[in-house]
Image 1 (tube, rainbow, N blue to C red):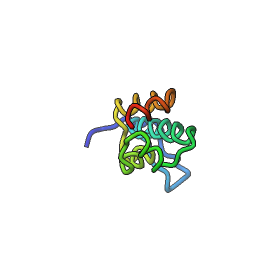
Image 2 (tube, helix red, strand yellow; image 1 turned 90 degrees about the vertical axis):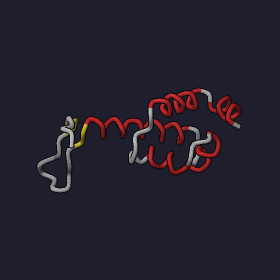
Image 3 (cartoon, rainbow, N blue to C red; image 1 turned 45 degrees about the horizontal axis):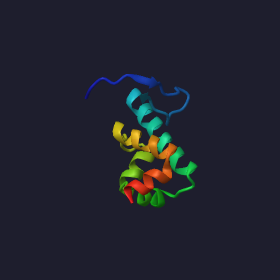
Length: 92
Protein backbone atom coordinates (compact mmCIF):
# COMPACT_ATOMS: atom_id res chain seq x y z
CA UNK A 1 0.00 0.00 0.00
CA UNK A 2 1.40 3.36 -0.93
CA UNK A 3 1.84 6.05 1.65
CA UNK A 4 -0.86 8.61 0.82
CA UNK A 5 -0.76 12.20 1.95
CA UNK A 6 -3.42 13.11 4.49
CA UNK A 7 -5.38 16.21 3.46
CA UNK A 8 -7.65 16.24 6.49
CA UNK A 9 -6.74 14.31 9.63
CA UNK A 10 -9.38 12.52 11.65
CA UNK A 11 -10.95 14.33 14.59
CA UNK A 12 -9.41 12.65 17.67
CA UNK A 13 -12.57 13.43 19.65
CA UNK A 14 -14.69 11.39 17.20
CA UNK A 15 -14.05 7.64 17.33
CA UNK A 16 -15.86 7.11 14.03
CA UNK A 17 -13.99 9.81 12.08
CA UNK A 18 -11.15 8.93 9.69
CA UNK A 19 -8.30 10.58 7.82
CA UNK A 20 -9.11 11.94 4.37
CA UNK A 21 -6.37 11.53 1.80
CA UNK A 22 -5.58 14.06 -0.91
CA UNK A 23 -6.97 11.58 -3.46
CA UNK A 24 -10.24 11.21 -1.53
CA UNK A 25 -10.68 14.97 -1.29
CA UNK A 26 -10.04 15.38 -5.04
CA UNK A 27 -12.55 12.58 -5.79
CA UNK A 28 -15.10 14.35 -3.58
CA UNK A 29 -14.57 17.67 -5.37
CA UNK A 30 -15.16 15.99 -8.73
CA UNK A 31 -18.30 14.34 -7.35
CA UNK A 32 -19.57 17.72 -6.13
CA UNK A 33 -19.01 19.34 -9.56
CA UNK A 34 -20.93 16.59 -11.34
CA UNK A 35 -23.81 16.57 -8.84
CA UNK A 36 -24.01 20.41 -8.84
CA UNK A 37 -24.13 20.47 -12.64
CA UNK A 38 -26.85 17.83 -12.82
CA UNK A 39 -29.02 19.38 -10.11
CA UNK A 40 -28.46 22.86 -11.56
CA UNK A 41 -30.04 21.59 -14.76
CA UNK A 42 -32.96 20.22 -12.75
CA UNK A 43 -32.31 16.65 -13.89
CA UNK A 44 -32.51 13.38 -12.00
CA UNK A 45 -29.59 11.00 -12.30
CA UNK A 46 -31.48 8.87 -14.82
CA UNK A 47 -32.51 11.93 -16.88
CA UNK A 48 -28.96 13.29 -16.95
CA UNK A 49 -27.51 9.89 -17.82
CA UNK A 50 -29.97 9.39 -20.66
CA UNK A 51 -29.73 12.91 -22.05
CA UNK A 52 -25.92 13.03 -22.09
CA UNK A 53 -25.21 9.34 -22.77
CA UNK A 54 -23.46 8.54 -19.49
CA UNK A 55 -24.09 5.06 -18.05
CA UNK A 56 -26.29 5.49 -14.97
CA UNK A 57 -24.08 3.29 -12.81
CA UNK A 58 -21.02 5.29 -13.78
CA UNK A 59 -22.78 8.56 -12.98
CA UNK A 60 -23.83 7.23 -9.56
CA UNK A 61 -20.31 6.04 -8.81
CA UNK A 62 -18.91 9.46 -9.74
CA UNK A 63 -21.50 11.41 -7.76
CA UNK A 64 -21.07 9.25 -4.68
CA UNK A 65 -17.26 9.47 -5.04
CA UNK A 66 -16.92 5.69 -5.17
CA UNK A 67 -14.74 6.20 -8.24
CA UNK A 68 -13.04 9.32 -9.52
CA UNK A 69 -14.39 10.72 -12.77
CA UNK A 70 -11.52 10.88 -15.28
CA UNK A 71 -10.29 14.23 -16.57
CA UNK A 72 -12.14 13.83 -19.86
CA UNK A 73 -15.43 13.30 -18.00
CA UNK A 74 -14.85 16.44 -15.94
CA UNK A 75 -14.21 18.39 -19.15
CA UNK A 76 -17.43 16.94 -20.63
CA UNK A 77 -19.43 17.95 -17.54
CA UNK A 78 -18.02 21.48 -17.71
CA UNK A 79 -19.14 21.77 -21.35
CA UNK A 80 -22.58 20.38 -20.38
CA UNK A 81 -22.78 22.99 -17.63
CA UNK A 82 -22.18 25.81 -20.13
CA UNK A 83 -24.07 24.43 -23.17
CA UNK A 84 -26.50 21.69 -22.11
CA UNK A 85 -28.82 21.95 -25.12
CA UNK A 86 -25.95 21.96 -27.63
CA UNK A 87 -24.41 18.86 -26.02
CA UNK A 88 -27.73 17.04 -25.84
CA UNK A 89 -28.33 17.77 -29.51
CA UNK A 90 -24.81 16.65 -30.46
CA UNK A 91 -25.09 13.30 -28.66
CA UNK A 92 -28.76 12.74 -29.54
